[in-house]
Image (cartoon, rainbow, N blue to C red; front, side, top):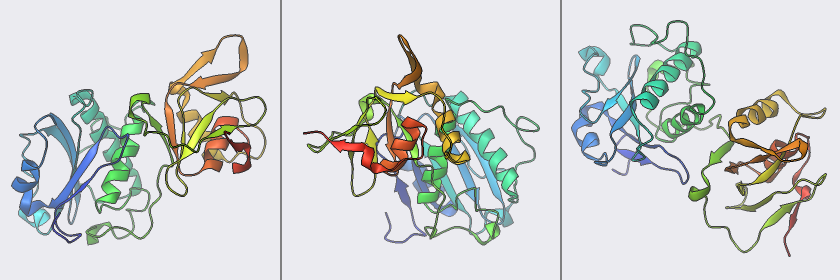
Length: 276
């Protein structure tokens, strides 16, 4: 917003429940004034010599538990939502999971303890919020948690050169982008699925796609984990025990990744055939 990566900035993404604001902690009143009135709850990071994670409503006094030395030169990153489903429970879960992941990465935390002791039991339905938050924090300047343990105390004011991004994102059907004229159909082992490109690489899979049960040899552990993370979004198919149906859309980093996720096999983009 200020023409500099050290100033105020906002990050939003189509299909995401969350949005993010970031800027110097010294400009906190201005940042809070930019929050939409409908954004009831938030989760935030304060990053200076240490990292503090918190959550609360719009009246939350961000940084009030930090010493003056910890606040010096610190940046604040806030994720919020105008969706009423993002309530106190979800904001609290996000706070706890971020603390867990920062703790595991070895960052210097200002939080006195982990909210759930040795860690919070993951909820597959809420983990997509954790992924969204990490991506948005990274886009606004906070290094992704996977690499933050290297030089974390140096601050993270600029956009990082590289980031480990989650590349399969569930999208609610009513939040899918309008599909272009050029569409594609999956042509492999009788599975039914349609999709389209948005840009040069990003590939969207339409809701209702078939999902093969089980994986074949050649699938990496990472791809298996991605497929496992979609279980919550699968519905059974009457009369079929070898496939299920994805009731949401999927935004994938590429068409080959979309094919692997749906088929459970290590295949490329050629299985996506243009629809005449």
